[in-house]
Image (cartoon, rainbow over all chains, first blue to last red; front, side, top):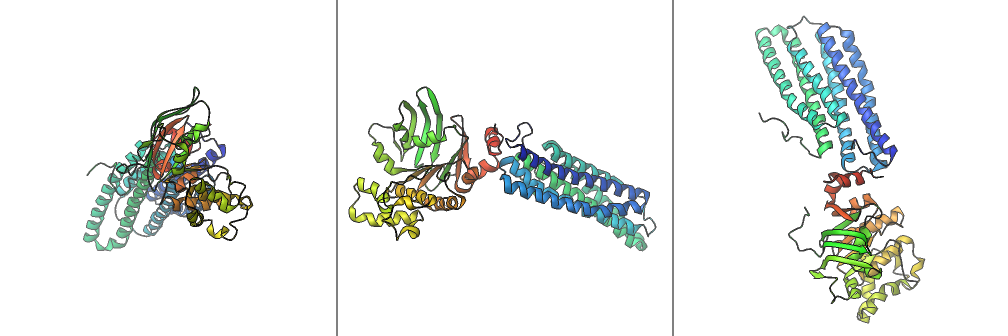
Length: 230
Length: 256
């Protein structure tokens, strides 16, 4: 969508705005769910974790609403050019956001399970990973709202940091479990949480790729483009 | 870039300008049209796309004060050269108009009219009529009523009859000026299907206000604005990723 020039049809502008607003609402819910998950991790407050789990249904309903709105625009407006890319990207982003909600729920479920065990270690890297992932989520949503190539490219670059944190947590936990097999079960749950966070970050890169597609028509998926070479 | 630049174009315009007196209809238009390709000309009302289309078979000759500069080359020949007979030219570059315009005669006579005047062999004409009607996907619907009035056909059938009438002259290029604008969606779909079949044999240039139609039927799309060609390219590219902001704004409905 060209931000300066409006459509001749005011209703078309309204339809696209409604679609965008629904996605922004989904994005906002994901941000707040992850923030609460982080609070639950640090405070060991499982009521907070349970409240995050309970919110997933609302996100699922929003996913259906976005799909319905996007299909309506396709059917009634026959969008072209950037409008078409925006609508198709919206449908993909909405799928990513819904999956992100499921992943956050998985993290909270693991936290609830972990609360029955003695702490394996002091949580330092996991909150750091959550913080990085949270920033990527916020940035990917901002990139979508502002159709910003710059923010989208930053998200793609920041994924490397989350991957590095995951590898570090993985090595540390494997070593700890090797030395003390009695922590195997909580250790594996922590590994799951780290993996979930790594997947969350991957979903933000999907969103960033869709933003790039919307703005420039470039399909950078699976290409490594716009990412720094390793 | 056009996808078939290594092939010699069937028809092309080179810096074509059409003026009505001092008023510029289109200015400096260069486009190449290739065999077996459908080219759609799109743009808002008054952008010059119909003026341009009519200059491709000298239909503008009928308008007083019209001035043409630049070139229109058909199979390499300048169609505005003094040696060219416009009537003969129009046998090679046929035209279908916005509103179906059958003659108030029978279906048979509608199609036979042109070939008879062009001195086609009389014995050849019945087969020519059947072939033309078959190509225009109308044969099965009218084969038992060839000698009834063409005015008794539906709008969609009349338009296909006009296409059959143009085909009967064995042209190599078909110009279509909004051929579906007076038709309902079913008749429109039939004409669109027909265009896909016809393009195997003819070079087709279509002017349409229906952008989705241009997207569906054409291989190449050219976008006109205020008498100028803004951009032309593969239809898929124009409709998904146009290069020019004017094209983007038109396709996404941001004019006005």
